[in-house]
Image 1 (tube, rainbow, N blue to C red):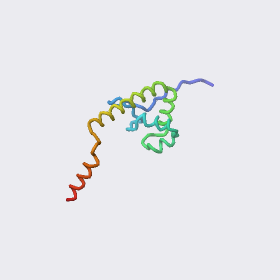
Image 2: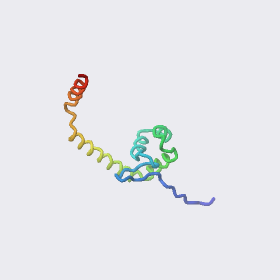
Image 3: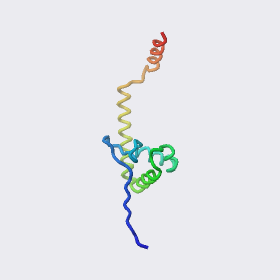
Image 4: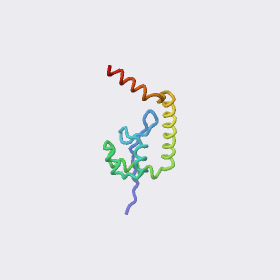
Length: 111
């Protein structure tokens, strides 16, 4: 048997915001790996995200398993960014009194 080297292209690409997207879709690497880490099979992930081909999901999972340290570092950065954005949004858009404001708008619209 002759040994051959196969070079596989992993179907992920970073967008302008520094987010890795899978298979020329808007599905993020975070989403695929999160589902996998939550126990979903590749087939279940493909069912949830039909725009991502099953073969690409397998490639991404394989890449993750081979490069776990780097991917986990990326995922931690993304989680930290998400927390920062959430905090900024909560500071800008206070939810206190929202129920009262919505009820007042509803009553005003009924008049």
